[in-house]
Length: 240
Length: 240
Image (cartoon, rainbow over the protein chains, first blue to last red):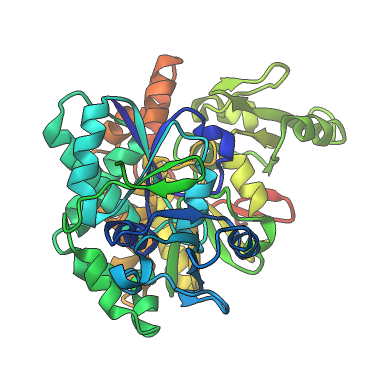
């Protein structure tokens, strides 16, 4: 299995992903919001790459069963039912619902990678489950860090390194790119306390400033949820 | 002094660099070729972002005093006088000459950052000299890793981390971004033997395959040259 990490998605176009196995990581917070919403019974997440498209798509969907969620500059968008805090996506709110989802980095990364053969959503909360699944697939894979505004983010890179390190303990058959080796080193340097790493990160500091400190705690928990969201035919679901 | 590292330049446009202090790093090999050519008496380097532009620019320059150099896929381009091996740029060949220079990553990164207020070229060979100069300037700066094909490269990131670490020993007045902290960690993990790191890198392996192993040795030497090439009015020169 060849393994590579895409540290910034900006330079890649949609066709790059055709036929590949891709794991999207957006630790703060889209990955965790998607994971928690599906764990809490949301029917599906429809990731979109623009606010305009979110409004358009949701307009055509079945009344009452659709919510729009997401953020711009960490905050809920006017007219949206939900923001991008995983804690908002409780069973009471999301059970049985389709959620049209726009975020600055994560939903865009998923939408960009839509031509992938396999496309999974990962964060610390489901990392061992995803690792096992990749080892079972036994195929080359690339980890797509959503990053921040098309640029590097430490939390996604550390999570990518952690995923590679777990896969390494499960399979000896893994060939590492420069970027995978770098992320392994970053996990070693910064992965001792995920919560401390998140609190010290640029994105983490911004979230704390904007009142989302509880989200950091939620996003730091490891192997707490264990579901594996996958993307197929324009929606993110759990396997039946 | 705020310090940030741009790990992949793809998502930035030329205007991003306006008024900034930028240090371009392309360890394999453009930084070293530029540094060695200027140390060996080249009058100036004219970095260009396309082969076509290299041919156009050199056509209008003073006959006999201009050479075209650079590479595509690590190899010298048909019709060019020189490739991108720093070892080719000897005093006999380059002294007094203007060199129009095209490479896949490095010359493009310099051309992209042309609106910077200050723009320097760095590699391991002149790293302490550049660090001292930045500390003397006492200004915010960004390190632009040329990378590989708009993507991450381990050698440029480790060199960026080494530069930040030397600057930290010279000045306590430095504020680190996520990317700077990550590069510091990468320098710690991979910087013990620069030559081993280069030989293990994707780009290094490709250069060895193509017969350029000697270049890796040259590019691994630290503080061996000590000049500080800077870009101004479309050319790279040494300060008088």
